[in-house]
Image (cartoon, rainbow, N blue to C red; front, side, top):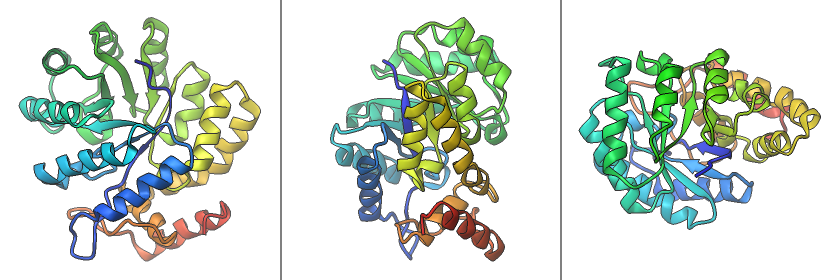
Length: 291
């Protein structure tokens, strides 16, 4: 299964009491569909998976599948630092009808590469759903080394990696040494580079804010129109950077709020951005004619 294109790492909107805003979540998904994304990723890092209860996690996945309704793909976030829990979430995503599952490396406990292979192998052997492994060492403290990715790519239902390591050498080694294996950028600002090296797409934070422009960028590159893709990359570059002026997803939620779209404040221990950061975000949005 190839998962090329643009996938939005959806924020999870909350209401004024801090509860799930399911109607707002549905509205955001409909906007994504209308603006031409290839898929959505609920309950990832950007979706504040770390502070959702197990029940909330499952509701968000089920709602995403229902609202997508086959129009776009759903890659459900199902990772955990507990292999049994990650397997439970992955089985739930499969039963809910998700197209694939995004499984982050176990965080905090810092497994070895041998432990990572056993972790992903166990999950893959117990489910019949395509898996996307996800390396983001800045969040988890452990990287999936390219040799490990290459070994995991030989498992039939491990079909892709989301690479947010920031290490292009690592990306190139995986692209060079795997066949029919999807490589998705996990960093918006590196997506143009990864696509030019032979990558297949991106799981994007920025497409929460500008799905239409991001879709145009990704598909221009995939269609070989590198001049147009490069122009869009540099046009969107300030957005890529400002969305990480504070810890993700707080800046993305501030941007959506400024645009009048469902967001709410992030859950503790994350907090809303400062006034200075909000002003910086507002300036970037104005520059893109988004407000």
